[in-house]
Length: 128
Image (cartoon, rainbow, N blue to C red; front, side, top):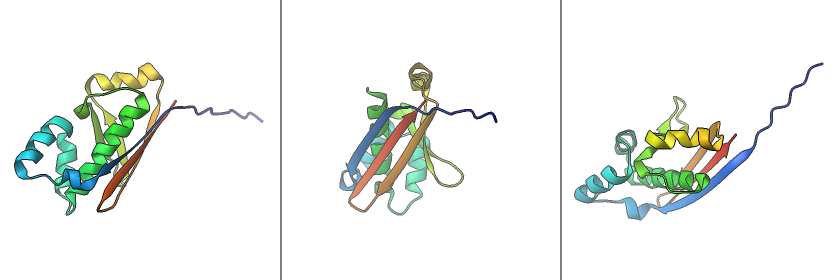
């Protein structure tokens, strides 16, 4: 009987919380902040939702949790939250940030986001 072991190593963990009230922007502030922080996909997804400010807070928490998991700042728009067909959120690294996975030996990024009307939280686990 040939049994092969799969060794999974966690190479980074990040968690962050965001107060939803901080993401209830007026139109001008929303346009400015979205250009600085969010991807087009994130804005499109959030703005289709009734409580879009909760989604924006969750996306921000996910970006910050990803930065913490990798151990340093990554440009905001180089970290994006996308959704699988099932609706499950996932992290997508863009531009130079894509190379971080290979540099750190990361094979998978796991993301969980939750939110209430007051608070959003996200946790990221980097796996090799």
